[in-house]
Amino acid sequence: MHLPKENILFKSPFRYELENLLYYAEKALTDRIAIWTPFVSAQLIEEVKNKFNNLNDINLHFEGGFPNAERKRICFTRSEEIMKSPSIDIPIKGIYIKGNFLFDRAKENDFRDVLHELDVEAGEIGDIWLIRDRGAQAMCSQKCANSIHQKIGKLREVELVIEALDENEMEIPFKRAEKIINTVEASKRIDAIASAGFGLSRSKITTQIRQGCLRLNWTLNDQPNKSVSIGDLIHLENKGSLKVLNIDKTKKERWRIKLLRQ
Image (cartoon, rainbow, N blue to C red; front, side, top):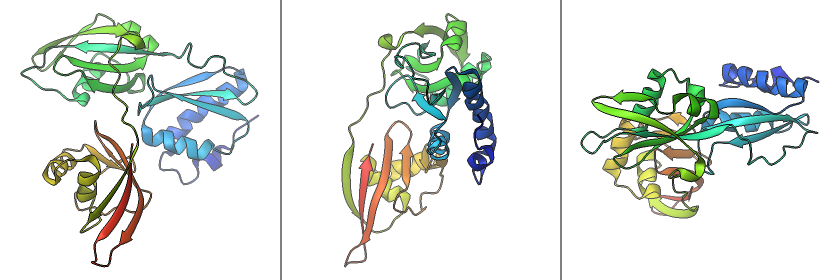
């Protein structure tokens, strides 16, 4: 039993990444066991869902440690194999990267860099989120969490201590309820639409775009004047996502835009 490799890779912008994932999928088919991949990005997950959608031989299960996680691990199983209690024995665990950042603010990627300096591979790390001024928490592989428990690191001048946590001990990021937003704008510029959708000032949105905090269809976008289209997905770091559901021109030559905030 083999997967249609060339069909899956055909015209994909993630050809290299999909080839790596196909190794895990083929192993699940051959060995008749559930195989977990490393953590992968949200944009790659969407590509996997699209490419594997019509395959009958294999099942996919996505898990990031909490419901609205972006980075997730994929579990491949043969179609006839039923995952028993998928909420149990998922090889994901939490960590708390503790430090005092009251006077030295840090971002999620700063903590990701610290983990890399401790020889943690990128695929071992899931989502990372800030815990006020006390550091950050993150999801990672169970093996990784156990191996770096009680390790000490440093972020700039702040000393860090890493503690492994069970999910019920973590401050899981709040999941915002979905909401339909209707707005009328002078243009289809992404800064205007993101400002209306996320409820932030235009200047603040522009600043965050320039800082690399916004992605359009999971691709980094640093152009505030970029136009959006129906079906586009706008993601802003720590604020969630907006899906453009509809765009109509008004009689006054403005744009009536319908958004789904997730």
